[in-house]
Image (cartoon, rainbow, N blue to C red; front, side, top):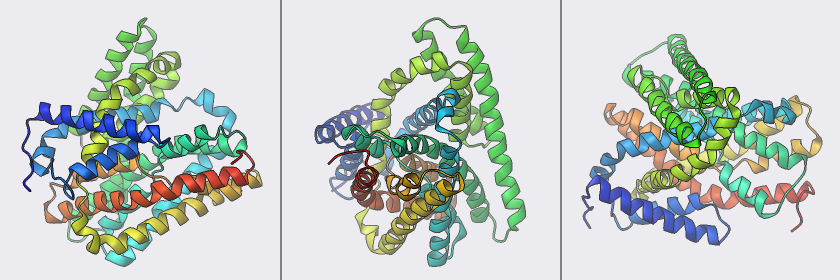
Length: 401
């Protein structure tokens, strides 16, 4: 069966409706809508009905850029320091350790299996992300309350920010390893650090300008227009100067959310409403890339990825909780609630495709491997993850089954 070759408007209209319908069906079963977006993409993509192929997907670059900007802004916009202060320093410590734990274990295992540094860096970076949607869904469904619940919510909120920073470092280093036959580690790390630092400084500067500008606005309509404008400006600056788009926009959103908290808070719901069709279509189109023909090639790598990621999250979170002297119930169970990955990890995989897909055969193979490993393993993590979260909350005495 040949792929359809649709014009971009017809394509986006169809994909948005498919994403909406599949998300609605999953929501009726008390499951995160994002699973429906992914499922719809798999069914309509490479491995099943082949409605959307590489040529058609190439027309959606602008949609990907806008959706990634909205995702990054919504991550940063939730990080209001005044609201997070009561959660304590343990949140940051646990988030850093669990993300770093997943990165290091997946990085080490992938490097051992494949022997390619750029593969290991990218897979490790993607593994560091945790999806809040499935975890928050379990907490809401069972009306969980208590110190573990509060800590989980804080950690999954911080985790995405940590994952973006890890990805910025890893992608900068991976690009250097792909483009050069022999490199010294020191200059590679310095180059990556410079890119991350410039991305953060650019985002922070834009965030202060945006925040103080938002203070002078009086209507939600004006606020919405300005925020959409600065999201695109932030992404444009990043593209122009070869910085991390996600990091620039996220840093901008964090600063704006703390300089003008009332304004940003008032617009977050509207951002979600606008983002729903775009982000839903984004996840649906991302999943069309899943190719079951690659399963024999990456099946072993996928299993190693899942096991090492889960172990890294669990033991990293436990170490962070111990270091921050969190209560025993948090030390024992926090790591079990951090296994779902669908969401920001998919966004990072699409970033890999865009950043590395044009870097010759090595870059194209890396991007194909990354998106397929992620989508294959997501099927498992989205089943096991919510069950592990429910078990942790039950053992902590914060829900009744």
